[in-house]
Image (cartoon, rainbow, N blue to C red; front, top):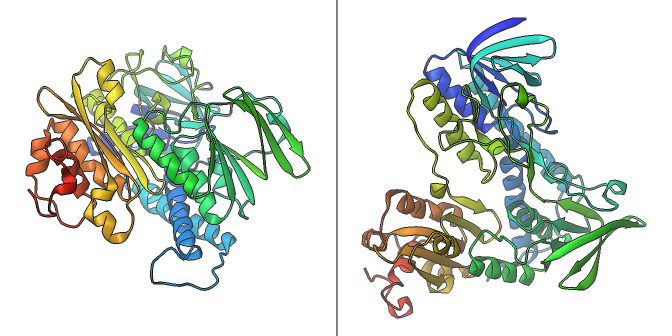
Length: 472
């Protein structure tokens, strides 16, 4: 089989689909080649199969289970609560299958200009890729092959069975105890989820604090909340060896000069991602990668090869499904419309789906200072937000970073229920160059969590603890 296309997309996840849809709209004759080496991913890639969709489904179920089991709603007493975990996992699979069909299989079938190949592709030259014995020729290429879990080299690790996010999402029983290696977004989400389900959870983090790329006030407060809810956290940890003790795994490590030993039934590694690039024969086409194998692109998503672009997780951090989709679409527009569009990572929000949720956009205070900005910052505890007091969920805070010269919002970090929804107002503020005065001048619904943005902006001028609820 020999086929010629104007565009060949390697991958079948969010970036690939966004690129394929955009190319189809433009009438571009396109091939999308799906299979890659990430186990567990089917059509649709990581997010729908072993990422966002199944994890957020289970996170939601786990929180509801904890609320009922702990009798934490004032005035409501619930009797004995049990969980059929196998049924929960089956329900999760049903949701995944439904969304995979509706959002990917059905969508693909409607793309009349796109031909899908379910196979592993590798470059044979700068104009052709091989799928087994078949050859596909292309004028332009987009690499969107994604990433897979990165497992560190640790003495004894090959002697134990360990989990990644993929296996953890399909466990048939709740582990009695779990050690999560990694204290960033994925690790903390899974740690809290299994803790909510009833596992005894320990988190081991290599850096000196969890969520090290967020504001320290956010990291410290989230750690306090997680520990208050029963999760044990060790930071600044170096793992020396992993051994077995009967049915248990034993993690021997050191922190701050002290030795620690953690025994657990299951070990989950949430230690970053590695790109699916090593088997693509990138040298055949002249695509450069960094030391970790991530494809190097410019702001227009073009690689070092003149006819190759890349998008999604394969180009490195931050790794988010909506960002991958934007990058895929931008790549197509730049290839075929010469749009010269750029992807500004400073305008991309990030969210950690713990409870309370964590969200950020723009620069942290430290990042702003490193870039030479004269910034001003305010931190507002969630306690001063009326909606938080009303529903009894006032653990959290917001930190707003502004340019002291012109009052423009250049960064925001939020730890609060619904932070994933609140952050979009801040994202627009960063993207459009809005000031704190613009935020204050915008009427917000009372009582809502979104008012946190306005209150934090007002705190640059006044002590909000002494304001009425209706102060404008």
